[in-house]
Structure formats: C-alpha cells, structure tokens
Amino acid sequence: LNLDPSQAGNVRVSLSRLTIRNGKPTDGLGGGGILAGAPDASQRDSLTLLDCVVSDNVNNASTSTSNAPGGGVAMNGGSLTVTGCVFSDNRAGSSIGGGIHFTAQSASDNLSISDTTFSGNTTSNSSGSGAGAAPGGGAGLALRADASGGSMTVTDSRFTANTATGSASGGAQ
Image (cartoon, rainbow, N blue to C red; front, side, top):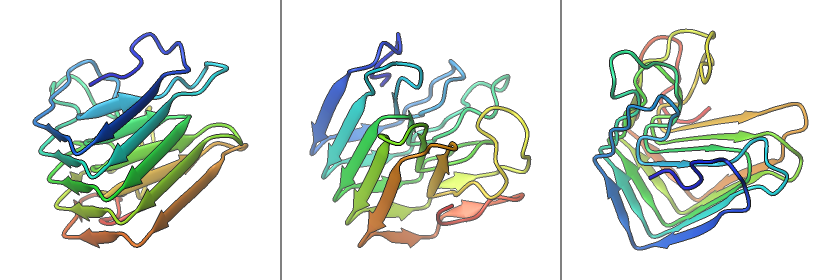
C-alpha cells in the first residue's frame, strides 16, 4: 500500500481496525505492507494506525532488490502515530526494520508508538552500505534521524521473539 506514490507530500491517512497482510512489493522502495512519506516535499505526509494488525509482509520480495527498509511499514519523513497495533512476522530481508522503519529528516518529523506489540519480525542486515542499510537495524523497529531529525517516542510497547542475523539487533534500534 503506497500512500504517496508521487511523493508530492501533504497526504494524510488514518487506518483503524484494519489488517495489512501478505504484502510483497518488488519496486525496491521499501514498506512491505505500507510505504509512506515524501522526504523532499515541503508538506510532510502523516500516517496514523489505530488498533491495526500488520503481519506477514515481505520487503525485498524480488531477489534483485536489497536494502529497501521496512518489512511491515516504511516511512521517510513526516508524522507516524501507532497506537494499539500488532506487528508480527514481517521480514525486511537484508535491510533494516522488520516491523517498522522510520526516518526523521527534519525537526518537524515525529514518531509516536504506544501500546503496540512487535513479535516475530526479522531482518538479516549485515552491512552498513547501501540505501536503508545500517549496522544494528532493529528486527522489530528501526529508527533513524538525519542531523535535523525530529522526535521519536515509544511507550508501553512489547518486543518479543524478533530475530536478527548479521549486525542487526533483534528488538529495536
């Protein structure tokens, strides 16, 4: 589900009590289940997930694609709010963020996650080179901030049985 395919910005999406399952994009952009964000737009995108299930999504589904982050959700800039959701069994392949990958690229970008479960997500990141690659990229949650990065908060959330190989970390990074 690509929420802003032209990356024009100013896209506002709220999803409530929805299941996003079995996404397998081959475009090399990231976001096996949901892809959001317009990093170069003056008006940032906003995504809110409430009581959703994001499961069994595979990023990098094409064997010729690698290092496109976010097995479940990838968001590059903007505002991401996640409340009461479950991210399970998503796979980021050789990239970071099996469950979620979020990059804050400006001071106004923000991420807020609360009462959310990350379970059984995987990554096999083993390199610090290439788009989306970063040593230690979390199997459950991977967060990055550029020099002017915004705010990121995770509260009352659970990380269980997330698996990483190579230099990646299992829970969050």
